[in-house]
Image (cartoon, rainbow, N blue to C red; front, side, top):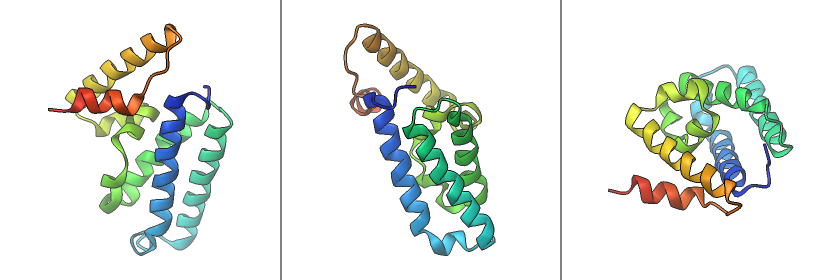
Length: 133
């Protein structure tokens, strides 16, 4: 994984924003014991550090963290950007309908083709074009 590619930088920005949102949602997080919340936020922070370093194995930890947000804090699960569910894949895909997965697969194919040609690919713009009515 190359953390310098625009694709990864875009998803890192989403991940950091989600982390900041979760930290700010202290009222909602009080429903889970405080010590457990602190450990969860520490793991989330470690995930960001690992991904920034280009650690491909941390994608599995990302799947786990996204799934934990959905199960631990269902009232804020809607705040998870759909792009992050696709980015981490695996178990996260269980929270996406088939039609949405098909759209993301198409975007990913376009991204792979652009990267193969050595062209920059704007993930966010491509997603907006494909997902617009």
